[in-house]
Image (cartoon, rainbow, N blue to C red):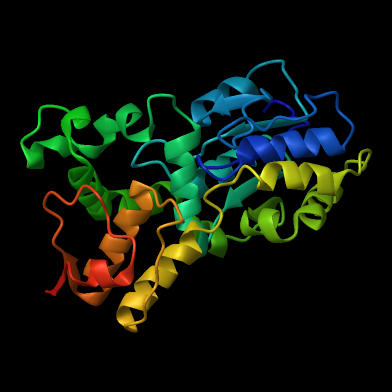
Length: 294
C-alpha cells in the first residue's frame, strides 16, 4: 500500500460552504491566498483551492504525486453512493478528514445556496436529468417551459427528499470516528472564530492571521438566505396558530415557498390551491384562503 497523504480532505455536499472553509483554513494558517474570496452571490468561488469534485477525483489524487495541505470534494453524486462509505475509503489514505453537514434547521439555507451559487444556468436546469423529466406531469416539453406554480409544486414533492438522500446529514450526525472532524455549518454562523480556531488546532496548524471579525462580517453580509428556515417555520406556525404574519419584505425564493407548501401538505394535511398560483401569498390571511383540508 502506498504511504498516506499529508492532506486533510474537506468532504461536503453542495451548499454547505466547503470552499469557504478551505479558504479559511488556508488564510488563517498564513497561506498566500486571495484576501477576499466572497463573490456577489455570497459563494467563495473567488478562491480556487483544490476541488477534486467527487470520489473519482479523490482516487486520482491518491494515486498521484500531488500532496496539498487541503483538498475538497463531494462524497455523494449518485443515488447508490454512500457518504459514510466514502469517508471510510478516504481514511485509508489520510490520517484525518473534515466533514461539513447541517441539521434540519438549516435545510433551506443549504438548498437555496445550491440553487443560487453554483451554476450560472441554475441548479434545476443543470440537474434536470436527475429528476426524471419533471415537466412531463405538467404536459411541458422542457423544464424552461414550466410556470412558477408548476416548479413550486414539483419542488414541494421532490427537492427535499432528494436533498436528504444526497446529503445524508442524519447519518453523518450519528457517525463517530476519532479521525473525522464534523462541523455543523450552524457553528460558522453562531461561533465563527472558535470554530475555525478549533479546526486549525485539530489540523495541527498555527494561527497566523487573526482578523476574524472582518472576515466574518464580509461573509455573513452576503448570506441572503441565512434566516430563511426561521422565516418559513414562522409562516407555518402562524398558519397553524391563526396568527397574522406578513412576510412581504422577506424575499422568499421558490424553494422557500415549496417548503411551506410541502410542510403544510405533508405534515399538517393542508393542501394548497396551487393551479396558476404564480405569485405566492405574502401574508397568512391570503395564504390561509388558499388552503384546504386533505
